[in-house]
Structures are given as structure tokens and as C-alpha cells.
Image (cartoon, rainbow over all chains, first blue to last red; front, top):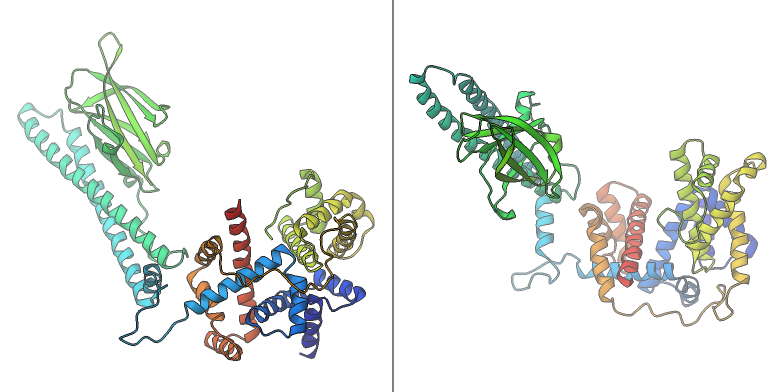
Length: 331
Length: 195
């Protein structure tokens, strides 16, 4: 203990420039190689700055401090920063307020939210909400997958006798609508989940989110998402179909609605917002005459805007551009 | 005192790699050692009154790095002390060539620049920014530390340490680290604001 006090005293004298050249060099050599002494120097430096700011230094030490600290830009800046910090802390010191006394002028809404979300009960509630949202999303994903399976089964049954074909088409259309609704709901839930995660992260000061059970791993089949795109014409960017892809998505099936089914096969080109071709499919059939399905590896789709140029292939094999479709991938 | 050589640094990557290898065969450990040496050189040079401490520290590192090939063959001991020896010479050269009108560092100056002026707008902006960059519990700890005044300050700090079930010295070290981050952030922010 006594050696630490001696070191403290030595460091203080070093900082105030009271050591001989030889003593100073000895201290500096030790500062280069002794971690503890260097830590003491940092503490002593802070103490001296505090004492200077609060007027606790003697006249003599104050003059020495001024000569040593205030003529080196970085040290002077440190003094100024700590002074500002101290003033700020004192201005914002918690005070007892009576009913008549106004709230502190600097108590911002941000502070209130910060403190509110730091409450353990609030953190636990948010974590619970997050967990519930994850479960809802998982349920919708499972439902979506099941229905998609049914839709595909129905598609496979299309060559059935003409008498049942109309019924199947109606059922298919109905399932497709429901599937779309579920996709939209899934998207909404994903956005809600992302929003909740953001709030929780903000509330915990950018720390890792509170532990919550991870969603069930998706099967390969679940890693495929389908979206229907209607023809874009000259839509502006604000009218892009917005889609959000979970990280484990393997493939995205874009169903391009057809106004009329005039061609036996189609060519689709996927482009990014720079007009760069990302994918070209040359012989796509028209599904039930109502849509063309373009399967896109999810890795091609990053956050951003895309368009699909759809051409019909005429009997002579030439492509005739018929429509374009726009969509936006959300983060 | 962020890492990385600044102005005047003209060493090759190869020489820098050799320097790191000399400090420690493990590159990660070497990088830590490099940071530590640089930070301490800057601190020492500042307390010798050098207004361009970072530049002189980098000049020192530069000179050592150029000799590292020979150093490996004969130098024994803590490399940090070798750096210190070079820094002393660099510092002496600097003072010899320093313009005469610049005040000598060892003088006790009776009228230091005024630090009692009100906070400037950039300073206030940077203060809030740098406090925001701390985690909320760290920010609160730092602000609370400065809420004690006069004779009550020590008691206030002791109470803070008691509440956190740590020693007073541990609290001081914790605050010192936070304050160091805060000061570093303030320096960078004010430089940016001034640019």
C-alpha cells in the first residue's frame, strides 16, 4: 500500500513537472514497461484535471498544472472536455421535484424512453412479444408452405377430365388468393418482428438482443417463397411490389400475371436497378395460361429494386416484349 | 490516440510487418503491443510539452522500424524501452529545431489559455454525441461520477462503489476507461467539426 502511495506521489510530481531530468527519465522508462504504473498515471491525470476544474488545487499546483496541461492542445482539450462533462452531469443531476416544481429542462423524451426500456419488466415484456411474434411468423410460414403444397398438387392434377377442370381451376384460384393473403400476412409479421427487434436493441443500448428461443429451422421446402407480380407498365418506384425474404430463403418463385395468354412459351429477364441482367429464362411455359413462373435463386436478390422483362416467343422463335414487372426487396 | 501511423509515415508494409514480428511472433499480440507502445509514447511526449506528440511518436516508430532488421540480431530486452530511447532523441531533435517564438515546455506559464469560457456550440454538440455513443449504463455511471461536488465528492464515489459492490479503485479505473473513450471521441468530433 505504501509503495502505491509513493508511486501516486511520484506520478503526481511527474505530471506537475517537479522531477529532475534523471527522475523523469526513470519514471518514463517505467511507464513504458509497467502496466500498473501507467494505469496510475491515467488515474492521476484524471484526478489532477478534476481538481483543477473544481478549484481544489493549491495556487502553486494550479500554476504548474496550467504550465503543463494547458499548453499542449490534446491535454487542453481533455481539460475542456472533462469540464463540459462535469457541467453537463451537474445540470442533469436527479432532483426531488414537488408537485409545483417543473420537470428538468434537459429531460428529453429520448431519456424517458431510454430509462423506460431499461426497466427489467419492460425488457422482459418486449422479449415476450418478440417470442410471440417469432411463433406467429413460424405458424404462418408453415401454413404458407402447406397451402403452396396443395396449390402445386392441384396444378399437377390439371390434365384431369374437362368436367372437373373448371372446379379445380376455381379451387386453384381460391387457394392462390388465400396463399397471397398468407404471404402478405407473413410479410407483415416479418416487418413487425424486425421492428420489435430494432426497438429491443435500441432499448438495450445496441447490446445483443435478449435471449429468445430461435425459430424452428426451416425445411428446404420452407426456404422457397412465392410472390405474384402484376404487370408494371410505367409504374413509378413507389408502386413496386415490396417483398421481404428471410435469410434462409433458397429460392423465390415470381409469378408473373398474364393479361392474355397468346404465346406457347415466354422469355423472362431479371434486371437490377442498374439495368444489369441477372437471370434469363428462355422457354417458360404459361401456367394454366394465366401466369408465367420465374424461379430465382435467392442469392441473386439483395436489398434493392428489380424488374422482370417478359417477352412472348412467337412460332418463328422470336421474342416479342409484352410486359414488365417491378418489385423491391426489403432488408 | 487512435492507432495507425499518421502524417510522415512512409514505411513499407513489409517493414511494418517485420516490426510487428519483432514485437511478438503472434500477430495479434504484436498489434496489441504496438498500440500500447504508441499510446504510451504519445502520453509521455505530451507530458514533455510536445504539441505534436502523435507525429513524434510515429516518427519514433518509423525510425525503429527502419532498424528492426539489425535490432533483431543484437537487442535484448523489452522493445518498449528501445522505443523510449529513440523517442527521447527524436524529442531532443524536435526541440532543437523548434521555432524560437514557441514557448519552451518547461516554463511555468502564469497566464494559461482560458478554459473557463462557455461551451461552444460544436463542443456541446460533440458532448452529446460522445455521451450517446456510450452504452446507457456506462453513460449514467460517468455522469453520476461527476455529480459529487466539493467534500461530498469522495463520499459520493465511495457510495457508488458500494452500490456496485466494487472497490473505490476499481470504480476509478472503470471511470478512467470510460472517460478515456469519451475524451478520444471528443477530440475526433471536434476535429471533424473544425474541418
